[in-house]
Image (cartoon, rainbow, N blue to C red; front, side, top):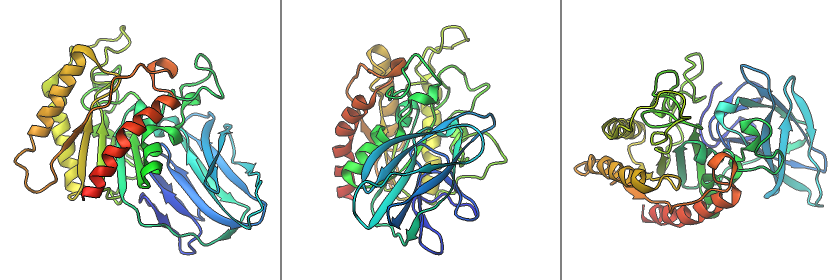
Length: 351
C-alpha cells in the first residue's frame, strides 16, 4: 500500500504519518521528504526504534526525535542494514509520544522506519489547517546546522536540519500541519548549476513522490490538499552557478512562464488553495529588483482569475546568512519563521 497523505493511520490506529512518505507493508514506512515523519504513542519506559538509511549508494542519513513534545536531538543512521536505536525515557509519565522526523531532504536518500519495540497505544490526529512549502535548499534547512559536523567537514547532508527550517518552525508556532516539497539547488526554470539539461527542475520533479526523475517510483497523489501553498523558488534561477560550467543570462520570460504553468498545475489538483509566492532573503541588488518584477508578472497573469483565491506575494527581509556555504543557519531560520508565520496565520484566519 502506498500513501502520501499528510496524516494517515493504519487499521489499528497506532501510527501517524506526515509529509512525503511511502507506506509499505507491516507498518514500515519510507521517510522521503524534509521533515516527513512517523509518530506513535506508547506506555512504559522502554522504547527502541529500527531505522535504515537507503539510497542508490550507501551512506549515512539523519533523523530528529521529539519525545513528549520535546526535541531530544538528531540520530545518525550509518549505512548498511537496519539498526536499533534505544530512546531514553527520562520522565515518570506512563504515556508517551515519539515522533521521528527526517532531518535531511529527499535528495539525501531515504530513511526506512522498520518498527519499534515500544508497547503501542492508539493514536489519532487533530484536524488542523495545512500549509505546503515548495522550495530549494533554504526551505530544506540545508547547511543550517554545524552542531555535529563543522561546515568545512563531512557531506552536504551532514549540515541539514529540516526540523528547524523556517517552514516546520513557523508551522509549530501557528499550529498547522505542513508538507515539505523542497530540493536543494532547484529552480523554476533552471537549477543552481544546470540549465535544465542534466537535472530536473521543480516542475519536472514535483509530481514524483520521491522528488526525482525516477519513473519507477510512485507518483505524488495530491492527497494533502493544503489551505496554503507557499512557493519560494528563484534563488537558484538567479544564481551564477559555480563559475566554471556554462551559465546563460537570467531569462525572466522563461522564469515567469514556467512559474505560471506550475501554478496552473497546482490549481488543477488543489482548486481551493491560497497560493503565496515569495522572494528570497539571499537575492538582493539588481537581481532582487528583477526578481520582484517577475513575481508581480506571475501574480498579474492571474488577475482575471475568478475561480481561485488571488495570489499573494510575501517579501522576506534581506539577510546575511550565517550558516554553511552562504545558507541561513538555525537562528536565521527562526528569524524567517518569525517574519513569515504571522503573515500566514493572518491569511488562514481570513479563510
